[in-house]
Image (cartoon, rainbow, N blue to C red; front, side, top):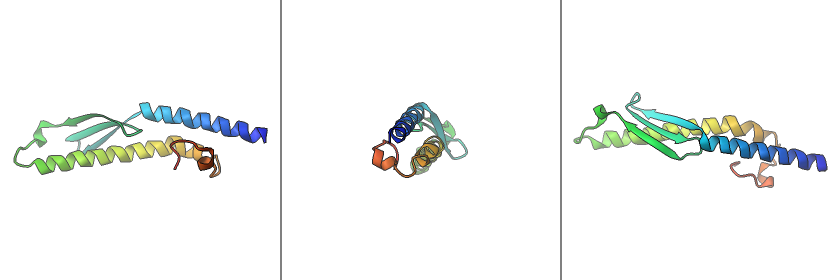
Length: 107
């Protein structure tokens, strides 16, 4: 039992380290072949938005709005991929017990 608890604690520490790494790691989402770029952390915090002036048309605000949404969705997808890469193997090593341990970020 002691060995199981030690393994669980080690995995929890690894998960916490991975989550801290994700909070600092940045991903970039883009739309319109890079005309709109959004930089977020892998945890989902938006850090910056870059909009190429070529896409700014006062008579077509809807396209710009769609590009911003597309870039945000692309950044979210990239963040999910990075989360799966960093946390997925750790969660799998818990044999499905992650939820029972109350580990944040596993779901």
